[in-house]
Image (cartoon, rainbow, N blue to C red):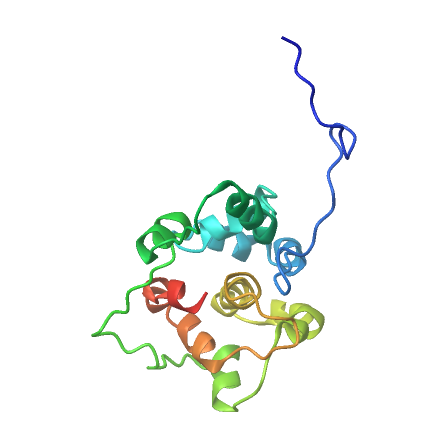
Length: 189
């Protein structure tokens, strides 16, 4: 039996160049980080929590969740919802809060991000891309790694617009990598 396949929209091997995953999540900031902060990016790529998120960019697994959702909804007879446990299995992002851990306690090291918190300065991804990436080579290695984490958290995990200021809560979290890894990101996404 001869099957009829639908007509191709694109030529074989041609791929669309997508920058937007949803309304606010853009991967170009991560591509820029990969070039400017090579070593720091590679270290974050090995992270057990945020490494798989970077693997999405590395493997160019960009998709539209709305399109996939509409396809699935048309195939199901009734709506389907994911439980928090299934979300954790799919994303690796924790959803249970740790009752005995204080996520607001600051570990100051007199670096760039400690200064941002002390002076109550506002930073967003636009400032990071246009200003901070040009001067970050003067910072300590740890502060540059924190910059990579903040870009991933604010621009990819939380998926805020470039102009939205990063909450100081996130800056405090990247001051302590262990607390950052056990933070319930699944509740914030």
